[in-house]
Image (cartoon, rainbow, N blue to C red; front, side, top):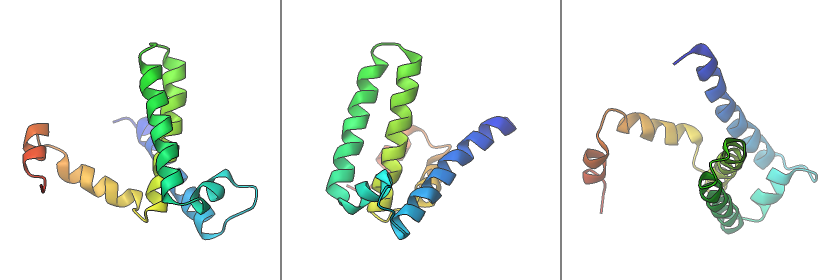
Length: 112
């Protein structure tokens, strides 16, 4: 992974930090704070809507549209994680744990 790619991944962590800050100290003009104040259900619904929009965009082949919708998905996923008190670092630890396992191996090891 190049240094530029690594730096770009840090943007995700910075966004998660910003979302946590909005959660800790909500501002009246913050969309993030409003989403979080609406609760987990609203955050989950918004994430689902964005995921569907991304899936639909992927069928068009329009890379700009797919990129834009994927950015929305990642943002709303981070908001949902914050609403559920699940830190991004915990998700990263889980991904790291799975790294190197085949998908079939990983699925077989999940709890029922």
